[in-house]
Image 1 (cartoon, rainbow, N blue to C red):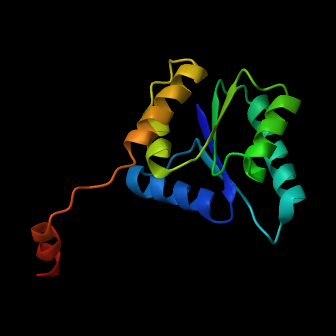
Image 2 (spheres, rainbow, N blue to C red):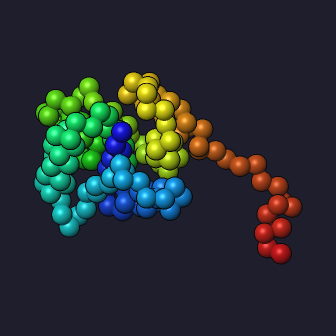
Length: 143
């Protein structure tokens, strides 16, 4: 299974680098970013090329994570997955964070994309928390 992170400037490559810092190099982890310098057309072309190359290699599944539902990277992923008729082999999830990327790398790839996506979203929600902080534990850091 391949994983593609899409985002506005900086986020996708940052998440990829962070995941690889924790887990080591991941050959199936990819990132594309929309930047002001390159613009939407360049991003769209890069995404189209990636998806066409990926589909030719007959890889069975692709998880696409986008930083923002309704944002250009997300919308372009939905557009190209549909236009290239890849909907059965691709799952697009919005709201990417580091826990979901790490979970996706380690997930059970035998599950269907729909089941896998639901599990990943639930796991990502569990990765967001507010810690209970006590004054003593905060002061201990200052010593």
